[in-house]
Image (cartoon, rainbow, N blue to C red; front, side, top):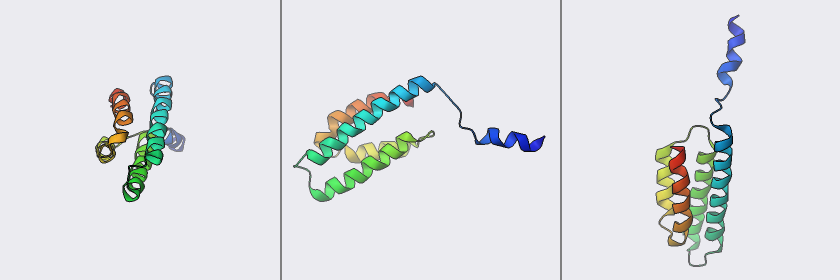
Length: 101
């Protein structure tokens, strides 16, 4: 029956579920660390901080998607890399993201 096949089209594919979930937890930990640095670093100007917080939120949203826009992720990482105190966390994140590409 034709109508019975429709729900299968709506289901998300499941790939390497346990590996992806542990990587996801690692990514969230790194992103939280970057957020803490961003909030607590008094050398970051308020306007730069506001933009960077928005970029970090966009990055979190993009990385939580099943299908990621890697060009957008790269642009967001580049924007955040303009803040020197975020570089250690961003480098750690880049190592993890290479495993997902």
